[in-house]
Image 1: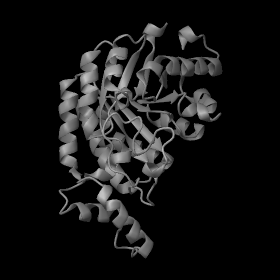
Image 2 (image 1 turned 180 degrees about the horizontal axis):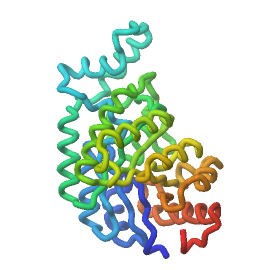
Image 3 (image 1 turned 60 degrees about the horizontal axis):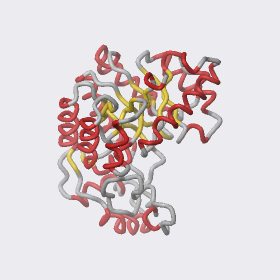
Length: 313
């Protein structure tokens, strides 16, 4: 049975790379390995080359890092981030200015969106069966007072290691504006539609924004959009919103994970509400050695809720 199981969303290159390459070759399942930022696109490509029968590579930029991306060439680093976090209207409060001045030294020089799209296009072209991912929208994420972390990322600026004093995870009051996130995301999705590549989509606290996004992409790209599959990964939508989306968008799937969805009993309502042929499973985990057991755990949960045999799920 495991030979037919696919973990549709995980982050194996966030862990020790030598261990990951070795473990990936002997996986009992297949995995879809996500990229998230400029520094891990090549890591995902290398892993796919090391274990081509086990790894489907996925290339793209995650919304946690969209603030690093400028829609046009920025006149300066400060001007770019000031536009995002300290707009002129309404006038920023003194405490916001102070927080911005503290945060700015931690932030990298912005990358033009044109460079991001060229990078994603080149990686997708190198792997004809690769997906776009992980991309998406996130209204919960605030920008940390921390320098960008080098790989591996399992203990990074967003997730300090056990026993850490927490200083690296101190969060600023700033979040990337939704309009900026949508501009970066829609450009990546347009590329996926152009190239005919499936998508792994992140959506956190953005239910109505996600509904609107999917409607716009369908209207804008038409048949090309409908020809690709879009997976709402570790889906946190309400069952009602999910049904609204799947009724209007025959190319939209959802996947659920033990790591994220099993924390809440609400995931059983999503399992029950999903069309039976558009329900996927994932680990959403960084240690590739846990991909199979975590994905299997969610597969069993899906089978139990739907009253299916595991072999038929």
